[in-house]
Length: 50
Image 1 (cartoon, rainbow, N blue to C red):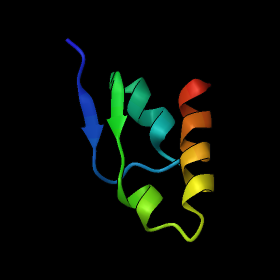
Image 2 (image 1 turned 90 degrees about the vertical axis):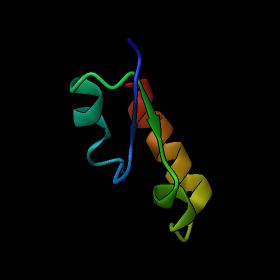
Image 3 (image 1 turned 135 degrees about the vertical axis):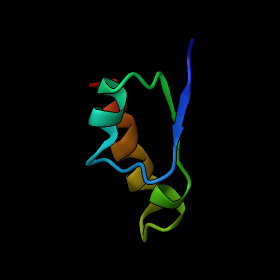
Image 4 (image 1 turned 60 degrees about the horizontal axis):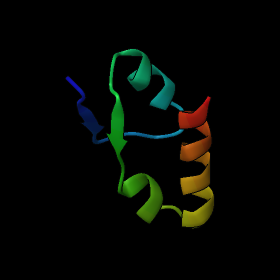
């Protein structure tokens, strides 16, 4: 059953979250709190694609 991980997700821990079985992630503060939200979103996406 697919499930979402939400809360405290960042480029430094997204790989471990996926390894724990999360098939999807939801982020907000990792992007919205960043001084460069576009770059933050791109970094998260890069980590998801690897």
